[in-house]
Image: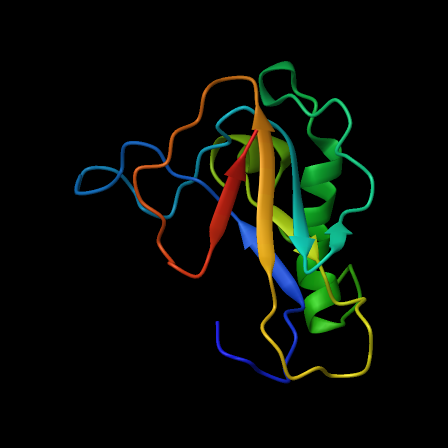
Length: 143
């Protein structure tokens, strides 16, 4: 990334499996890949600071990551929750839209004209392999 005074405010991570080059699969549906924990390192600061304890999609334990994703619309547009309801049920979140949303807006207020180091670290119940990273600027560290 080139040096820039604008800081990232949100990082959204979603995965897809077996959809590349297959026109029969809906590209707007994502997969949870049995992720048990994920966090973002922005320079040397971690988001969230506390692990997503006991996240397990197969055992229906994903309320915190669902809550973060559901709250995104309210926080991003700065409107009341009743007005900006995400209209995504926990079941739909798990099966169709399992996105990990990280609010990284609470950074130092002084702008720095330097490169922002963004690392995404995750752990999963199953072995996850990545055949292609969509954006070359993104580096994934897999545990």
